[in-house]
Image (cartoon, rainbow, N blue to C red):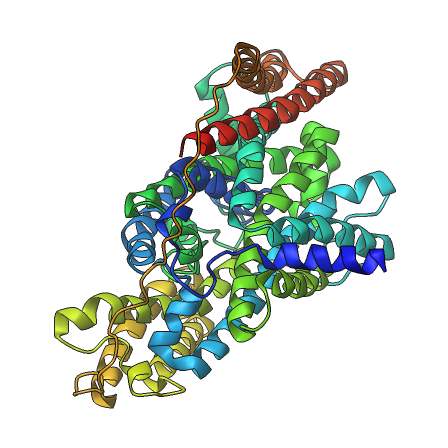
Length: 562
């Protein structure tokens, strides 16, 4: 009986984890910029960066195209978050999933959200798969690079990783951001350490000229044979399109509804440049070195093999943590999308079900075969709905047309939106299949086609006419003023410990880079890598203990004076 009461108490606590899934976020729930910087860095310093960075090598890109092309493409992605996604999120304070209900009708919203949720489950599953690729190594499980698992033990590892991911996603946005706040700086350092420790495996690096020579001759060697490779604009387009569903597709409204202003979209740069840009370059170096050492092609190696070749056990830990920090927000978004379909269920329960689906996806290591194509296609499928929202949110008022005309007319489906969505995706994929345009570039005409088609069809279908009286704006955010708090004055001992923990966390990250810099300068040996394992291992323990304490104390101090 007592156990049943305890279980009911746990369920009640979970039901109280309000994430404002069905109404606008109140101002008392807005988050500071640090959380967004950390959330983006944590999500986009992903375990799959090992795969994507290595694929640029295997697909025959050259060094200049990678270094400069990725810079431009990631900048375009940051601008898309800042000037398109964040402003709409700030204006509505809603998730895309609930905002779409006003635009495409309840039945249309169900179709879109089921599609959205399944795609995010698949992508989140890919992150879990990659994390499991590192944990498989201590159990002697071979590389899993086919579309199906070849070892039952790998499936068990996947479910163990998935359990951690689901638990964190259930806790909500703030806990996800706090988890990423701690992990992100360490992951950045590990990627840098892995690249520096791997470069000596490819040649002597005594200057920038030496590095650039190795980059062109050993890493990004350009096209070989009749394949032709991928060029500068392919890389620009891929870097921009890698997160299409999140920025131009607007699913990151789920995050930016907690932002204080639209300029917070610039915090996406931590993910795009410390994450994608730096990580892809470092992963390319590690991948080329791993292929050389293991005498295999990059297609035959998973992320666990690449990372452990570069950094040993700490490399495997990096893959696991990177998988967690990326799969968590994917699952969070998926849970929000599923919850719109089942509004009577609390978010934690829907997230739990989404987590089970995600973990089942993760059992199939498909991510290693067509990763670049997969991330573009999933974004392409979600993109047109973002274009439709842009048209209705910004263009309709300029044209003097009615916002939310479909819901004001009581329509279950906004048929112009559905035709624009399905038709634009069909046109794009058909053009790519016929070879008329490369898959990486398809999103540009698809976005334009979706906007033009929706505006024309909506105008014909009744968006311009007189409509029944009804609210033309989203619901206003409910404010829940926090109870007045009496600021707590930390003691001198607490202040000293707070400062010391911050210094310890910083110095421990520096310590993780000292040995790799030494290896880069003097050459790599087994003895030096053993020293790295000891030094960086101890520094990692110190970092996580001190940073967790510092973050908790910092949060307590901010809360006490808010």
